Length: 143
Image 1 (cartoon, rainbow, N blue to C red):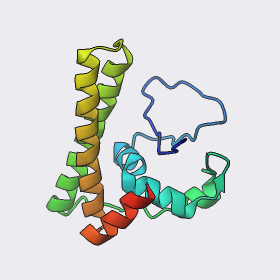
Image 2: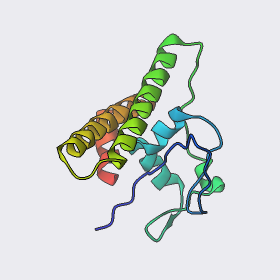
Image 3: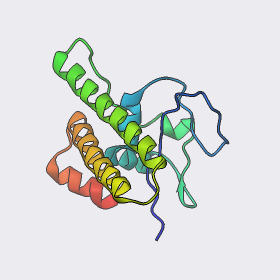
Image 4: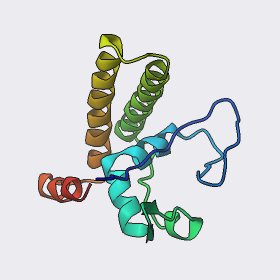
């Protein structure tokens, strides 16, 4: 069974990739957090056209995905934004550390930290979109 899920990343080195990736040309870890969340995958799978083992992430479809905007003049919203960005930075760091480790107890520990961080990101994103517990169950069953 092949499961497709979001796999967006952030590139600090300015490298180029082949045409199998989508490049967002700005430093937006907030957007990265949303797109890689369970909610982000739910939005992608509902707005983008399915092809073979994935989805067409072309602008025509991807631009329709509602990205929750933040009012930076509203301290509670800015705080939520900052918490999400902090978790995304943590996730990027964990994945970087994991990439250098062979299978080991240390790598297993990092994978558990990644799973916990992923859950925290999901919690924040569900809150941003005002997702109820019932809606969350629907989203996670489709994921």
